[in-house]
Length: 229
Image (cartoon, rainbow, N blue to C red):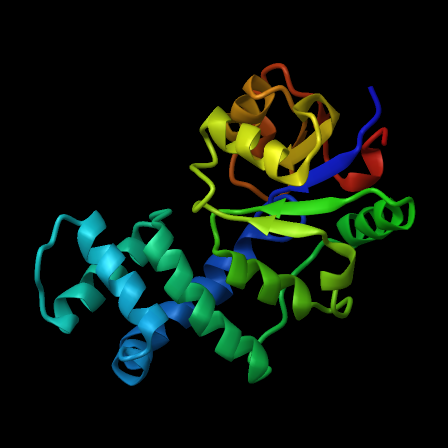
C-alpha cells in the first residue's frame, strides 16, 4: 500500500531534544510566574489554570499555588495538557521577540520539503500544544515551514502512547491507518501507532541511550535520508 500521509514527532525526530530541554523549558519556567500574573485575566489563560487545578485534584487554590504546581510539572517534564498550552503561549512571545529560533535537522527539512513537493500531506503529533508546534515550525533557521504542513495534533487528541490517539488522527485526516507513516524516537509511541495500523519508523537521534534502545518490530533510520520513501 502506498504512503498517503506522514505523521512526525518533533523532539528527537525532526528537531533536537536538547533545544527543547535546554532552551524552551527554562525559558518558560523563568517567565511563567510573570506571564500568569500579567495575563491571568485572559479567558484562555484562566481556562488552562482551572484545568491544571482540576487535573491536580485542587478544588480552589490561590494563584501562587497553581504557579508552584506548574513549575513542579515543568521540572518533572510532565506531559500535562494545561502546562503545554501555557508553555506554548509563553514561547509564542519568545519567538515573536526573536529570543530564539527552533532547531530542525537539515535532513528532516530536506525530506519534508521533498514529500511536500510530491504532494504528500504532512502532519505533526507532539506532546507540546498545537500553538507551540505552529510557532516551532514558523520560526526556524530554514524559514517558515508552516506552508508545507497540513495539520497539527497534541494531547487534546489523546496520549501519545495510546493506540486510540493514532486511530483518531487517521480518521481526522481521512487516510486509512495502513497508509500513514509515523516517525518518532520513542518506541512506545511507535508501538501504539502500529497497534492502530500505521506504518512506523524509529528515528535514532540524540536521545539518551537511543543506540541501546530496542526497536522492537520497527525499522530504524538514523536520519531522514535513510528512509525508503
